[in-house]
Image (cartoon, rainbow, N blue to C red; front, side, top):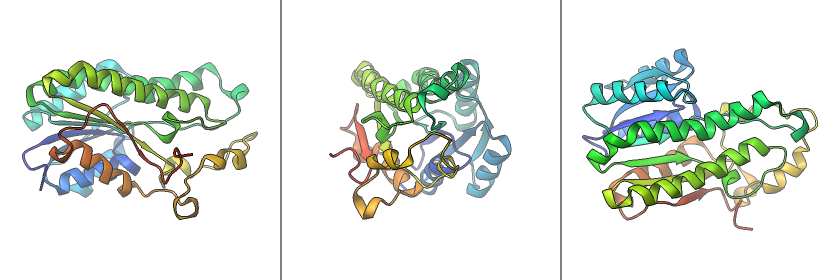
Length: 248
């Protein structure tokens, strides 16, 4: 129960990694607010966790919505100790097929959402000497073809994490990022888009277990470690959970 008495906000929590993280933190004692743009899905996820878990519908690309979410969560939970920025969108296509709208949506959610949530949560995390765990990607450390906007956004998350970690280190707030390889989530269930050379994409797949993807729980394990006091001397890192994808 290493999170007993702690409170957390987890975005992207209706399914996949976000839901696994919310389950893990709640199971170890945290009071959790699950946030997602899928209102029905996030309500169901909170009901499945039970206890004091609460749900909130949000589009993290909206700065005002992020500020409102944090304020309401702090009022309900009595404070904030942990912020997990998991919400994200994935989009494979040749570069010529990315419209301005598709580009902006990926950047606004994957990078803008992390920034606005960190900005809104920071005053409260400074009070508790809290912790932020951002969800980057192996694509935040290496290039992934036919994935240009997503790769750019996740490189941005790594840079944001490092810069913010230095800015708030003296105040005792820790900021880290997880960089997973492919994870078995609904985001990766869609068939490849036309024009995507999937064989080329898979050249950057994991080496471990013949290229097996991670389970959401594998990533939740890493998030729980970085959010806990066990990682009290760790800040500003981009932590790969990638089966060796970025080792070569």
